[in-house]
Image 1 (tube, rainbow, N blue to C red):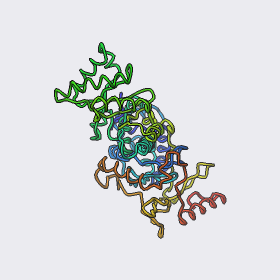
Image 2: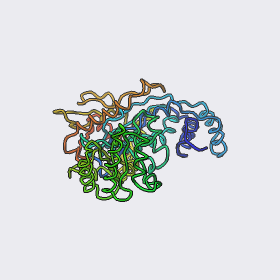
Image 3: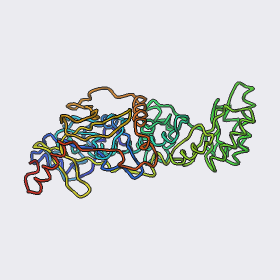
Length: 456
């Protein structure tokens, strides 16, 4: 078995999901339950998150199956009784899912996804949903910060595939990057899968294969009209002068050089120097593309300094979200068949019941969110969670990726200016609990202190 695919994805679950599910089944507890998927708190360098990964999560739920090989493997472990294995053989996802639309902003404690289904089904999908939604939300959030750093006048491309933590991560990162504002990806499979532009230049190895840099530039530029030439293999400024020479030769043939790429060194200084060489050589339309372990902070410095860079390639720092390489994303029981549930662990307490998130706006800006009980009256703001699956069937077609990207752009633009700063503090955006939710929370806490039944 080489890859995770639709046939084996049901086994992308932690063992304890299966042992808990087997116990639920044996004890007649396979009744409807509700789980929330959320991030407890934002990482230190995040003032917002961008919801992403829903589309792949829904595909997984639609195709959830334990085939004969999967059941046979579980039987070989000698842990599970035959009635439970038969339940798995027949299992399909039959529940409901409410979710925040992809591209929308989310904050700590807010449900990004809410699953209501028979307990066995709802429990078994935890691992995959956390992996899928958590990873893409992490990357999309990083990507949105890169877009903020670039501003309105510069574009950027996802270059992360070779440094991402696995092929599946690379594919999903290419999608999440576009949600956050990337204009394209270097990953060809990402271009095919998501219908987004693919972009790339050349490697130093190409230049090194030729006897000299000029010959390499001539060959590549003739093979790919309008291409980008990598000019820092040897001497960046001399490379720029050779581009001017090649561009002049190509112009006579009706061809052109589209851009040059800087991948090392003092990018601010070199971009100015290269810009001057290109302009003086008669090629002001040749753009400058920069890469080389860039992130939003370095890009913001270059933009603030007025460096004449037209576009950026962002790789390692994006796909690994290097400054915040994980989200504290969790999936917790909020309601059982007999009522709301609450966890009271120190620093890991949860919010009970089925919930909705209401977003308030004032003066064209986001003003704060209220987490409330589902259906609670009198809560101000626009509800964010919408039904995306009912009784195991999707409520509508997949959204267009360009539409999701645009929603992200609009949502970030709605943030108060202070929260669009890269150094904005986590928790600066106000998230409150509604009176109804507070009342249920207090009631359950009191019941636990009295030793009353969990659903009291």
